[in-house]
Amino acid sequence: MRWALVGASTIAAQYMIPAIRAHEGAEILRVVSGSAERGRAYADQHGIAGSGTDLGEALGDARVDAVYISTTNEKHLAQAMAAIEAGKHLICEKPLAMSVADAVSMVRAAEAAGLVFATNHHLRCSGSHRAIRDLIASGRIGRVLSLRLFHAVHLPAHLQGWRITSAEAGGGVIPDITVHDADVARFLTGEDPQTVVAQMASSGMGQGVEDLAMSVWTMPSGAMVMSHESFTHPFAGSGLEAHGTEGSIFARGVMTQQPVGEIELVTASGREAVPYDSYDLYEKGVAEFAAAVGGEGKPAADGQDGVKSLAVALAVREAARSGARQTVNYGGIE
Ligand code: NDP
Image (tube, rainbow, N blue to C red; front, side, top):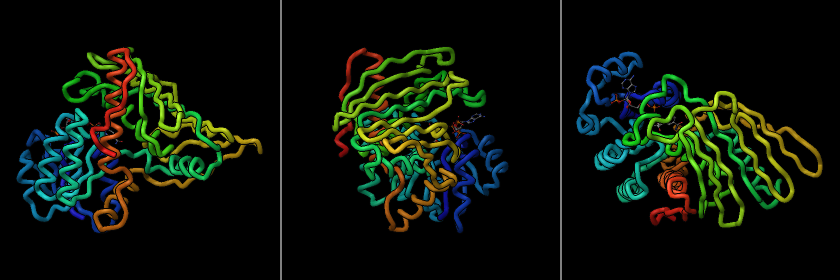
């Protein structure tokens, strides 16, 4: 599979370029940046042959099979629509867009064109989350009563740019992290949140955008989800708990980009450590995307998943802004 990168980003440099290259026969042909100079420097640094500022030219390259979009969030819509129009399969970063309607239009366009569209929700690719999902699906904790998601981190200095200063670029902890947590809750329970209540704040980093959010979501089954995200918590650690009628799962350190963390299952029989497969989360996502392009299965998180995680995140923000409970609007996506 031959790739074009749209966005000379940190996430591509740190995780996605190695993840793409881990697959036999994969090649990154070019990178598109807003700045010719920056694009060239990035291409040199990462051993990519081509660079430039012209998205149309990159998409017109008939050798390119797939596109990975990792620009700032407000750019995803136009870039994804152009990639789809050019007939390219794509992995788009989360949040897919700035509104549910825009995300729906991207996903519908890819469907109509018969293209594979993936959303880069890496957490559902991890061995730990898949082990927790399997425990829940196999009934080990009985009927799920509640989930607690702990995802309050400290944003590293090199990422303290648009995320904390620019609402226009899609900054704020809700589009950045709550959107991942929405996907985790959906992945683990197989349910879509129905209503949300929330509060948000700026606790030291956010300039015009929230850097701390807490929310509670109700699921169609009656289960509840409590979700906590931040950019300002140096020592909180991350994790999740799933509580059911027959057991509880305690997972620490698992809301991360690395294949790390511990999982414990507690039932009437006692406590047991839960083993899980350890591998690179992003490589797994790229592998499942490539398989889907080859006609096997679906991407780990597809376009519908990306719309739904965005819908929950935007409902959380609106609930926090208005102080009123919100019904999540999935924009007609089932
Ligand atoms: P970056 O800030 O690193 O990159 C975003 C854009 O900013 C780039 O496309 C680039 O523009 C520009 N840029 C980057 N570094 C510099 C620099 N040093 N000087 C000037 N401009 C720069 O963002 P991230 O990589 O953190 O995030 C990009 C996207 O990926 C977002 O949508 C984010 O939500 C998502 N993301 C997803 C993750 C996941 O695990 N799924 C994890 C992290 C981010 P240009 O291309 O024009 O050169």
